[in-house]
Length: 358
Image (cartoon, rainbow, N blue to C red; front, side):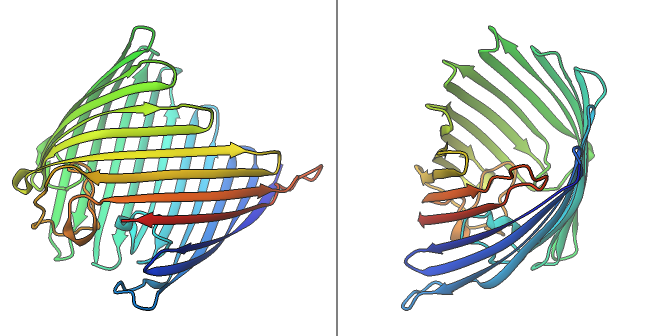
């Protein structure tokens, strides 16, 4: 059964420094029940307010094309997407500004317990003339109580000065579920082949972690990771809880301690709340609250790119800092028309509002 659908989105975002209008369209095509092709295109326009010392991003666009296929024993996704610098209303990861990425992801289920996943991609950083080519494969065995995994990752980074950082990483890990799955213990090691661990996001690293279900709604979580590559050395400990207090809601809070080589130690806390509520067959509303607060001091004068957080070592904020203090609130509403007896998918209209305090 062939299905086609399209939707339109309009967003207005405003704070004390700037106001942004964003408009987008997307289309979906399903030649059969197992395959879907998606395309999206959006433009944002940000203008600084009078008296603001902060420059606005101006006009920027983003687009993507994806093709997805699912069957009883295989899943495939192919994609290409691009986002110009400054696109959006402040709700997107700035590390993806000025990037173009294309690749493919696949998952094959050999048996009920054995699966193989793989991905390959290239990401171009358009503003700094750098790029990453990477591929990874992972074999997993999961019998319900025990999960074992083994994988291989290759990454080839070309920096803006033309130099290259290469990583060839072997991954071995296991997860054990105990006491009727209330307790989950996890351990993983990733080590370099031939000493190749120069890619900043694929270093040699080792991690242990645990999750304990106090109740169905409350989970205690903790982990400790050691990363030691040519370009990053970090020690990260995380302890917190994951709470689902009601249907459609989720709260997450963690306290973190981190040691970043010569950058020194830092502590930080992260929290978040999200709620999705369906009012009736047509209307639904969404609300989210996210934030971060630095608890301890940091020394980050030698971080080269404050828009590119590394996989080990945490995330980066504005002005070369290793973390960012902020509170962000988002609210939205979605209206879906009834498809009735038509084979065409229902039309969807959404509206959103967001504000942030740094």
